[in-house]
Length: 413
Ligand code: HEM
Image 1 (cartoon, rainbow, N blue to C red):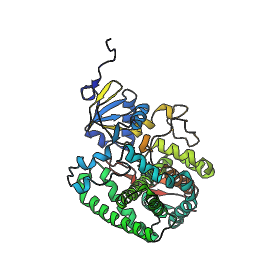
Image 2 (image 1 turned 135 degrees about the horizontal axis):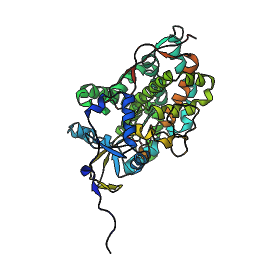
Image 3 (image 1 turned 120 degrees about the vertical axis):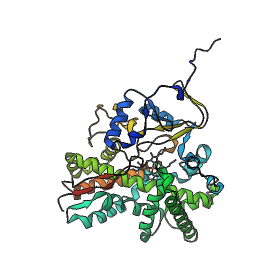
Image 4 (image 1 turned 45 degrees about the horizontal axis):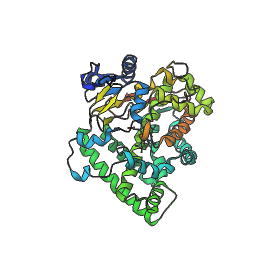
């Protein structure tokens, strides 16, 4: 019997539009529009390192297909790092796959449940109020510096059980360590490496302290999981705590900045949120759909993969574009992309900024709670928010995108 299946075409032989270095020069709005325009014609295009996946269904399928492994595991190799001490470290949860990943995820899942996140909501409101208080009377602020940057740190410290006086240290380490994901990381290895050493030493100290004096916090919970025979080694504990600090800091602060910038462009929606805090949950999904701080992620083929009649040879890099997927008309019930916080998320076709599949954001409940608490409070206490000058943005090569400076005026309260 002869097979009727078409012979797959090698992805590298396809004639596809290519996103070149000029794409990095585009503004965030231009780049999103460009990607969304391309996605109406192509489910996949090329970039300098591999292929960018644009279509919502393909982004979802690839992120859920376990043959595609997280490209963060390739970062040391791509950076030319050969030191076995670094290469042989246990993988972080983001880089782990298969049984290793399942085990790590199982051990930490409870600490990241919606219930655990909800317990921190009163604390989150206090943090937001403390950040607004110093600027409230003047009616002026740099939203990025005064509000977004400091906001997630006390919450991560509270979650981990780290003391308040260490907030500033955490903030700097988290920002520096996360640079490893930037396109320019190779030039910043000294800063990244130093921050990583300091953070590791600090976390080892915290673990030792909790071993001697257990408390009701995440580190104690992770140690307990280890002691119930599930064996998270100290090194694995350090890696996990690192992942929480790195994954939970720069992401939330930048997503809050992106969301506030959208509201500054839509004053009617800002007023509405102040009047209707019950819309907070929808508002957060809508902000993350409309302007997600994480625009895409990376995967590599762990074996030869045939997908949509295309052969991706083992090792091929693909970049599922979360920003392009969020532009899919099916993500909004009426198919229009306008910003509307009363919009109910479409069941089974939610916004993609938390990713999908086994690496779906572990901190999604916490991040949602943080944003749901912050945004309505800010809307109420910073009415008539207006941009006062120029918003300066992180470079387009930044993995987690958001404002560096975001000067505003508002009616003093
Ligand atoms: C708005 C804020 C956030 C956004 C937009 C975000 C986004 C994401 C995305 C897109 C991924 C998947 C990456 C991939 O598939 O390659 C991810 C994974 C992850 N996130 Fe978040 N995140 C946020 C907040 C947080 C917070 C608050 C924490 C922790 C407290 C956290 C911890 C993690 C961890 C540990 C992973 C890896 C999960 C795994 O590999 O199983 N994130 N996040």
